[in-house]
Structures are given as structure tokens and as C-alpha cells.
Length: 89
Image 1 (cartoon, rainbow, N blue to C red):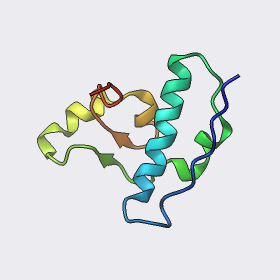
Image 2: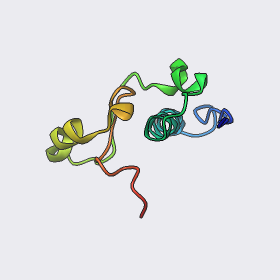
Image 3: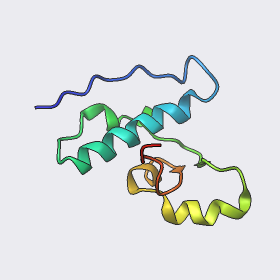
Image 4: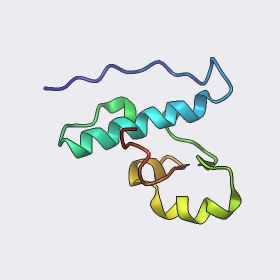
């Protein structure tokens, strides 16, 4: 059994904390889906979802691409990133 420790919420500590709180939820959900593990309950907490969309690339010309490419775990949290956001460098 894999156990994921609930990461602390970052929103109270710095300006982009809301984004990172949602990002952690998306990353863990993506990994649990990829490796067929059960999602920890904290990834569904409202604090792990953004109310306003966030685009990982600021260029307005790329927003349509990000809307299409973003993995579902990110899109459902209003995070729009490239398709390879989780690929190793």
C-alpha cells in the first residue's frame, strides 16, 4: 500500500500558494492514476482546486494550446499546463 502524506497548504504562506496547492493535488492524482493506486482523500479537498484559471505560460497566443494539452488532473483544477508538465527534465 502506498501512503501519501498530506502536504501542508501553501496559500497562507506566499502569493502563489493557491496555485501550488492545486498543483500538488494534480500531480498526486496523475501519479495515482498512472500507477493504479487509490487517490488520497486530500486531493479532492476544495483547497486543491483553483476558482480562477491559471495558465502556466503567460502568452495569450498559447492559451488555446494549453486548454487542449493540459492533462485532465490539471484541467479539472483550473490549471492549464503543457502536456509534458510531468515529464522528467
